[in-house]
Length: 463
Image 1 (cartoon, helix red, strand yellow):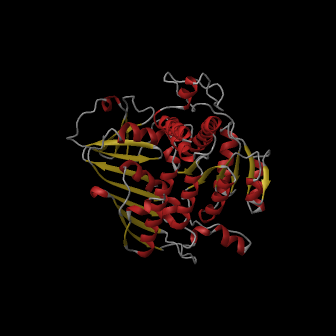
Image 2: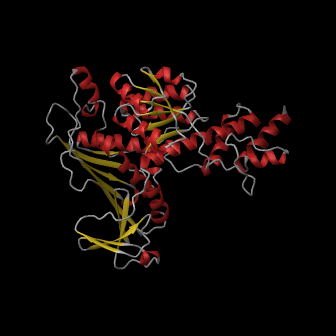
Image 3: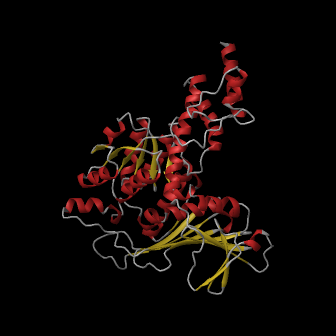
């Protein structure tokens, strides 16, 4: 018994500091990696990424977002075969079936979860319907991609986060697609982390769109169902259903979480019986004096969707997946900006950041110019590809571990996966999805109450 205990301790010590491939080499074996053909790194570790093996998925929720996902998978991502689709509304199910003719159609998501062909599920139902579907999917052993926000209440998002945390053998990815977008990920890694802003001061975000947000149906019951966004008991409003991605980017770029939020909301234009404001403002306060001003309306389109980060050395403007840096006169010379493309916004010169921006050309426009070459992949495509690849690789890493040690020591498996996940394709994590959803929930609450609300640090913890 004492010898077995010592072996277990040695194993856990090894897993903290080594790799599975190294141990197997020491034992005279080869790595049992489900990602066939992968090579060993010079240090003997296994490289799980870069192998786009087919990963069959089912899509639950075939409204406009779900059909957009199905279309992208079937047309642009050959390693993400859609083998099953599910929706309770027959018309949506028929439309999704035409997009994925080989997929099995289900009206009950539980039957989709029982389909052995499905390895991962993409949950694209209304926000308030996510929780039970995600919990059942994890219980069924399916990898999960869940659209953001993860849920509409603190209790529900905690339930999802805790279940996903316990399901250590499965990959859970929230639908915060900006975290996987090469354009934004590179902006963070090459510019924000390099402190081109200088001392961070504040951020400003806006999401303006002219839309009623109301869908029509000849069936009154169906019309009420599809207009869940207009019901504050089910919806996180403009801050959550539209602004969560911008709220998440600020959390990410600030590398901090808000400590308080104040808000205002009004119903100015779409007075059709809804109780969700169509015009909102929120001010989020962060440690160290940082703050984020978020504005959104569905009554006016001017300036659309954009974000600006302000610092002592420069400001960075993000718009339509492009970005520009506006330097202060006393900012230090960085070197690379001399060779970058310059675009003029009224009387301000912005240094283009991103692909194709190292050509020394100048463009002038009264409006915000978008002159860099467009990325052929959308942010959503990057996110879905990351989910497919990371889920396959996660399963491969779990299989490697279990083949050597079995499944009795869950914490040892968790420790091993932390190391294996270092080479994963960039994507939002469970923690990112949880903190972004909590941020959106508190922002929406402040908007509805028109109050200043503290956000306790413990609220951002789920384990």
